[in-house]
Image (tube, rainbow, N blue to C red):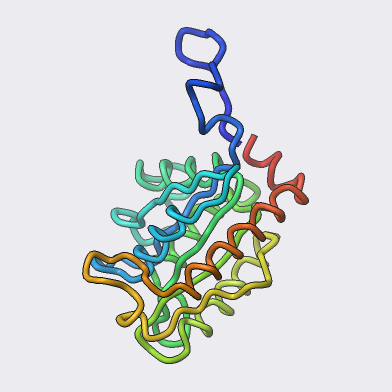
Length: 209
């Protein structure tokens, strides 16, 4: 949850900082594509975030290919990515599907933030998964593969509902806003389930403290 002291050391006025005390969800854009439907899906989730939560997004641009030789002195982009993951109370992944799996850029970022051994930023962090695709299966295989990857980090993941948006080109308007009302309702339900998972998961909350 968002907390801390201002630089002058004084107390924070919660009335002046409405985000204070809210559950901090980090939305990870799993695609590098400029007009990604998955980025648009996360933008919709930002609109639909329930009271008591704030959702911020992070991109994967600039994160180099993981090299274990560099894990003890990672580049600045990796350090910032890992800092954002550690600071969050929960993670919301939005992934496309490439060749029955997650994009290489997303798997690469997960690998970086899990290293070095014993210093994973993911460990025990509550998470939820969603995805959009122009295909008919709506990233179902990528999502199940991602869930398998997250098992290695002991991350509790929301099981239901599953947000698997198929035929994505028909679900957004020209400005990129999600117009499909059933999909919007599913995202709201997913976020509510994620908040409940955070509240029932003291390990993940202590990770973010």
